[in-house]
Each structure stands twice: as C-alpha cells, then as structure tokens.
Length: 261
Image 1 (tube, rainbow, N blue to C red):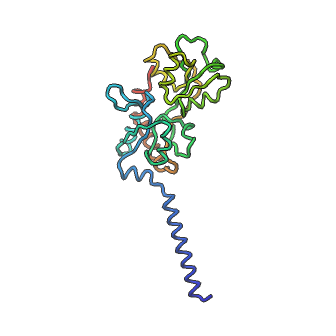
Image 2: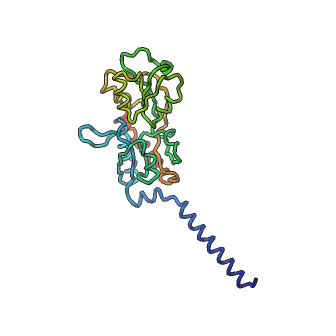
C-alpha cells in the first residue's frame, strides 16, 4: 500500500471518528436550564386535586396552594415566569418524559417518582401519612387495628405503597382521587382511608363526621421532579430553594398553607 493511500484512509477514519464524537457530545449536552432561561418560562406540572398543596378555588376557579406559591417564589428567584399546567396525576411522569413540563412540583414523594428514571431535587417538605376514620369509630385507634378492615387509598400515591405493605387487610379500595375515598368512608363503604396529613386536616375541617388518628403511619420525602438528565435545572432549583429558605419566603408560604391546626 503506497503512502498516499494510507494517509487517505487514516484521514477518513479520523474524520468519521470526529463526527461521531461531536454527535455524541451534542446528545449528552444538558440544556435543561439553558432552555428555561432562554425561553424565560419554567413549565410546572401538577394535579390540582390535592389541597392545601394545589387545588382550584371554588369561588374563583384559580389554582392555588402551597406548591403554586412555592413554584412562583422559585421562578422569581430564578428570574423566569412560571407557567402552571394542570394534568391528571397518573399522566404527570409520562408528560415530564415527553417534555410537557420542565418540572413537577406536586407533592410527589421520592418513592413515587422513583418508578421512572428521573432527576429529583432536594426535599422541600416531609409529609406524614395518617389514618382517617369516621368520628364514631372507636375500634380503629392504630394501624394494628386495620386487620380485617376495608381501607381506601388514592392510586399512585405514597399512601398506596404504605397500605400495600400491610398484612391482614380485608380489602384495599383504590381511587383515582382522594375525595372519592372520603365520600365512601363517610357513607360506610370503607372503614378507613390512608392519606397525607395536611390533606386530612383540610378535609376534616369541612367534614366534622371524620377524624384523624394521632399517630402517623409513614413519612414521605417530597421533592421536585425533573426529566432524566436535567441535572443543570435540578441544580438551579436546589439553589433557588435554598435561597427562599434563607430569606424567609419558604416559611411564609408554609405558614400560609400548611399550618392548619
């Protein structure tokens, strides 16, 4: 093989190798924060059926709650507008993967989010799961009393995982949304409901025929959830969360929505 042909072959191999490396670099590049910054908008997905974290105001129809105000405070700290996108709970992780949202700020626990390959922020709230029963029910005073009972829970929530871990329950009734579970409890079609503590307090303030048992049965770490690989955006959200905790804004939002007693 002459020298000219050898040089041509080596040059061709190096050229294609450079193209592959360049292509791989483009695929691996994390543009999650750059895209948000350039668009000037952070798209936040959640399901507005979970007061006091997020729900629609019955009078105004506006979505409001702890997660809403938290998202707006984070957006202000990051210097971008916040677009609130309401969706079905079961579709949130799939929508995140498709790019419908930049982040989910929707009282989603790390355990719930871990069913998909995602990026998770630092914990922004610790949420206890509790048992709700009818106020005249004196048989159920702790989780050990649920043996042989019918227990309601919302699909896809950490509360469902907590119920599934128990043994001896007669039946687990699974609902698309917690209000359906509460209605069945009130109408004696179940014996108890597993649900997050703040939601339980919010509901029993409107339903005096229900009560919350004192002892929490599980605890969940609540985090913001981003698409797999969105490490830059996750880091920026963590920085913003840290800053609003330092300047007191986080405490103001928490006192407004989550201090219910």
